Length: 214
Image 1 (spheres, rainbow, N blue to C red):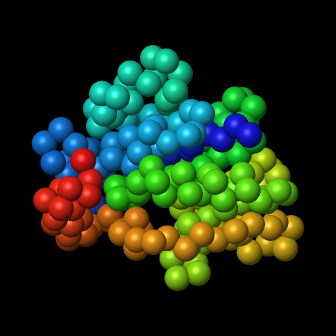
Image 2 (cartoon, helix red, strand yellow):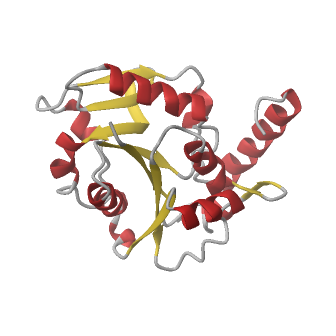
């Protein structure tokens, strides 16, 4: 079963006032690069990074740049990113389709505390459920990304518009899946404002001191 990552990094960051993925969590560590590296360290066959046309990709970690050279990481430019998340998601799914993937694990670039172990647990759950359409991370029962969308859901994804994400699809009777409750709510921290960014910095420094992140 071939699973690829769809890493959504094409948001406008309107509330932050600057591109979130370029924010520095530590020297040489960009916010947008943290979860991307975890995805590259997972069992995903490839990670598709979806960006806006204006993105200079300066935030990409060196390891991701090297992975682009080997095909392990790909960049997809979404010309319609300004129209909402649905268009970025569709751009990523189009690449997953071209790669003949069986499923796409959708991640957000502003979830810096997602770990490769979490990604691995989602992959194991999806592979272990025959006929499963999706596996989503759970926040007190509410499905959230990272989430794996099987090919059976892609036609519906391609019909999404505006800021609609895949969450509404999880409640449709046409699809069956699992919600894997996350062991750590840190992975769902919002990064939309300067205050939230500063709080994430504080958490990251504490995790560094405890040796829980690198």
